[in-house]
Image 1: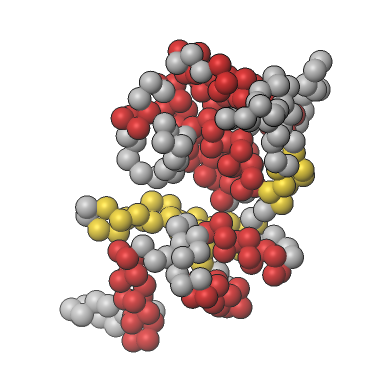
Image 2 (image 1 turned 60 degrees about the horizontal axis):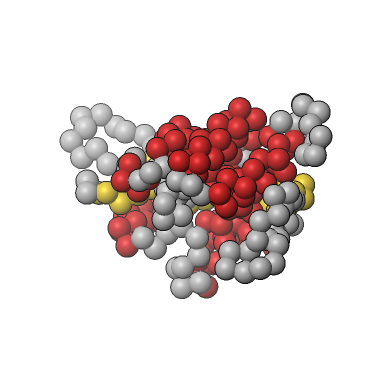
Length: 244
């Protein structure tokens, strides 16, 4: 509130709302809120469900788990909400991204990664079997993340660009720097145009070239499995089928 203004200010928030905002501010440093945080301003029922689910989990559920539970209960894709991505920094809380999501498309048509190069399960003798991809989080985990994750198999969408975590993965780091926000928008905001066939191709082959330099034959074959199997998904207008 403007305490020293010489004119009347309309739109002041109530004392109750001010207290709630202060409580929210105090929760961020403790990392007890989902990140990103869905905010249903115009749907009190859904927002209450988010709060209820979060409390029931003893403040441990993340964005993915909350969304999956909401969609399971409501049996429809979520729509008309805001998505807030925040981080704790040396300077305090920083809001990295805040955007409106008109519709979150959780389910996608079933996709299969084919083991075309007959690689084996790591540590085993059986041929590798890829789980069926049924939703956008499956796609993120099995398809997009492997091409831009660091050497610790982690992916930070909004943190500082740390080249040390990509030692011997120079081209993968280039893809990460260029496309991490696009992948976040593709997955969390259902902005499907953010990753097209060209972007997918660049991420795939930057990662493969790093594997070539590091003599990682297994990684090369695995990424080619993904590329051949999902080519149509990212290039819907091209008449291509694996095996042709």
